[in-house]
Length: 89
Image: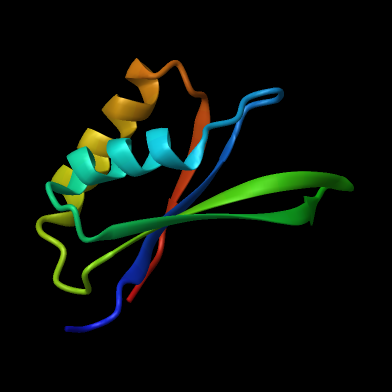
């Protein structure tokens, strides 16, 4: 089995946060797989310590446009204001 790779990372709006279990559920639904992982790190962005959320899944993830569309909808449904970035492979 191949290791998961990062497909997306994102930040949330001011004062917003999401726990790992909720994020994992959203990510599993978005990519229709249970073979996923989520991570949170912190970086300095514009002088502020900011949480960066990373979404990982199989290197053979399905149609990325469909997954991204689902992910954006699920984040919106959760009332999370995100800046989502796709990772190139």
